[in-house]
Image (cartoon, rainbow, N blue to C red; front, side, top):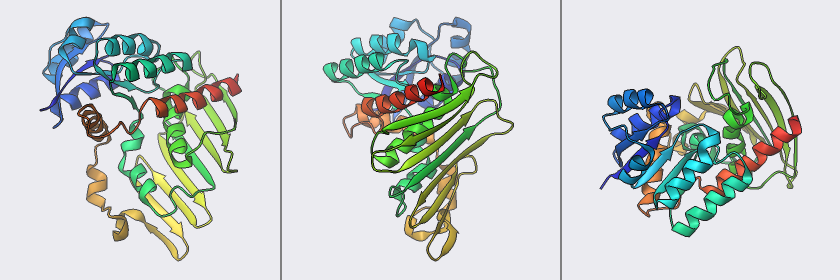
Length: 310
């Protein structure tokens, strides 16, 4: 039976969540809520679900996706969990570590799933990095995520808006938290830093450099994994991954030993995979791949980056 899902927030990404949940093989969209009734009605009509008040939307669902601005994550997450519903919280898990810890504790106490929306974990490119030989035996990671300016998500810095995606990926690959965080950044178009460059140093001696900008000339999303056996380079926008290792360079998409072909790479829908994983977790099939622990770890580093910027 499909999971009955409500979406709180009908903005840019909330709309995507609603449309995907409405058509997902494991989900049924039963309600949509937004603080702006007109926007909620428009997206609800597009998705084929009713626009309801906050309490009614939560009541109608078994699980709730919160895609509201970060400052509302804690309050909405509490309402969802206190109502006994499973919770999918778009990244970041909350605005502060105390808020995040409270949500995690409440989910555990109620026996509810809490998944955090770090969508890049579900991309075909990143799954190929994890699966590839040497993908996690790196000495250095280099990530770049840049986009032209858009008047969206300006209630938070670029660190919580964009960089946190790559912080999560690096933490997944490193398998440890950094012991040192250095960063620079600046405000350009908003009241919060709009670009940031962070360097993380891990207890094992490995390191990562992460760059994020929302005031860039062009879109760019890249990840390089450097180690003694060679290099892997991911282009998330081009959906390609190439590897250079002893013996030469070739695209992973053409390597039969990786079980990945060009068509499956192109057709992979990260949001659909993310929502399907959430539905499976709610059904008890598996714990969430990106749960409260992972969401808190990424938030902790992101806040340390903001503090280092000053």
